[in-house]
Image 1: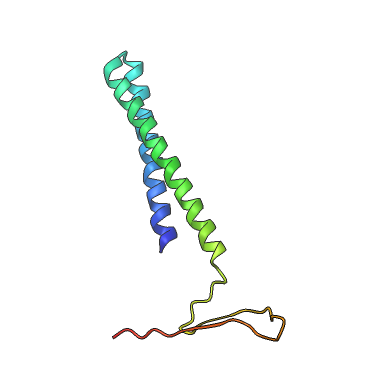
Image 2 (image 1 turned 90 degrees about the horizontal axis):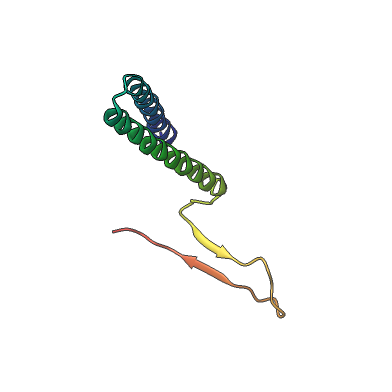
Length: 99
């Protein structure tokens, strides 16, 4: 679901950048400097938003890939694989039951 939403946001930004660029070129061809400047600034602003959404998407994918094998079971038992000098170890049991 996240991929569909992020992909949709990126597609909206891509189309918006394309549309603002076309309007910029149209008005700059008519020597309407004030309006063409407005569309150029909007195109540049939307390009930065597109870049930020792509970076956010890449960071989200990296975190998801990093946490792929993360254990989400209800038993939150942590054990240490290392044994001490006398065969001792560390065991942490956490049980939480919502009321």
